[in-house]
Length: 593
Image 1: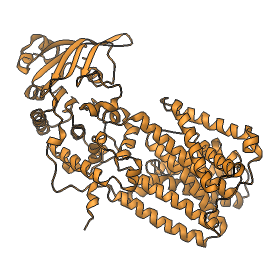
Image 2 (image 1 turned 45 degrees about the horizontal axis):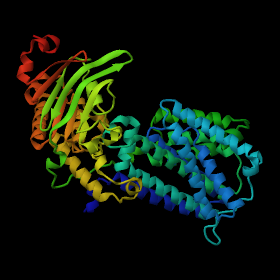
Image 3 (image 1 turned 45 degrees about the vertical axis):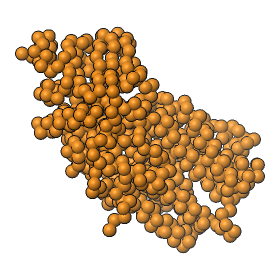
Image 4 (image 1 turned 180 degrees about the vertical axis):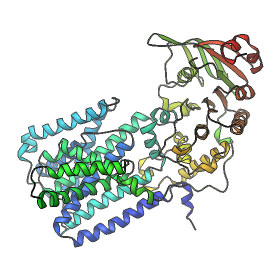
């Protein structure tokens, strides 16, 4: 019989991570006690590499790239070593000093670089990595310069503890973090991190402060690198700039990509694969054939390309087929429609004389209308009429060139992440589902703003009650749109019409007072359109207002209270469906004879 907490959504795949971590840790303990000291040292090096790569993998999952990540390893190593050697701080307490210094460096770098977009962000991190390596060499009186920093005191764990105990400690830390991050991927914060990579704007609409989340992940990745650096310093007891240069950063990135930059255990697989390949190639290619130079590196490059051609997602994509899938148990008793609505009175949205220019092009000109409580308003017009621009101005994505907008009694929020608190939800003209999540996880993400669980809670299962409530509500939302049978299906496998309905279910999760739907019927079959029309009427009766952009005139005419017609960015007509149906100007511009 399954324990009750399995119904919270943290099942199968997340349990497998902890089981796998426990089994691997047991194997490491045996290996550390039985292998010759040379291989124990290799275990330590692999563990430290994987520890640095685990933070970089989390960064890659969030859609960010750092080409100078080894610099944070170096900062952590030098800061911890200098604190212990020159200031007499015990190594156990000097280790947090290195972590904090690496994090502080990431804060300073992040303030500047995370504002950059496109290829400028990785280039900025590359420049930072090069600069730090130069500083390590130039600051000779402090870091020892090119000659290195020696006489670093060791980290003594227990009386009589040795290299074997050190290997066990490093792998214990690594596997706890890897298993915790694996569970995090299927928790509230993990769903937000996954959304950052593919649809940052959508994530903001549902309450994610994207800039803050990216910044937080950036700093956490740097702090993990700093931890790896501090452990490196106290094990080898000597530091030089070389292990923290550009080559080391590239090797970390290779380990992440080779292992699979979509899962935390990919970092472990990648670090192990890189070390095994390098060791075998050095001992076979270079020695067996009497070759010198960097022949083993050429062979390594060929093997790397071959592996990625076979498994574009890295080694993890080959392992993933044996990994348990994430599933959510459907609760026996489900919630009603009431939790999906938030009643409000008066005019919920008012646009007054709105105009919008794009580089001299007048996209909107003097557009005015309002949406009142318990009302379904249709916004129609030919392609290019400005409907999506109206949506973006109404929700704060764009600022109008002229006119004013009142949303829920005030101006649109300065931060898009405040929209759910205002009682506003929307869908998009182009489907924005997170492909790496299953359907019910995509729906559950719509309730992000109502949750409180953070990274630590998600890693160690302290969010079970909250997740249970979120997924119970997500099941009900899927039932409402008629897609509960697809709850465990990957979002990337959905047909267009199904994806549209999943977006509607996700929007309901934020409990909107006003719901803005951008072409929700695109790709729907006749029966699905009828269900959508019925749902809109139910929402209206429950107190939710709807602003609907749609090209399906049968759907629009049969479910809206009023219609607003735009043509070439200008207001053309407004009124009840029958009035619009008979309006000669509308017929000429849009509906046709």
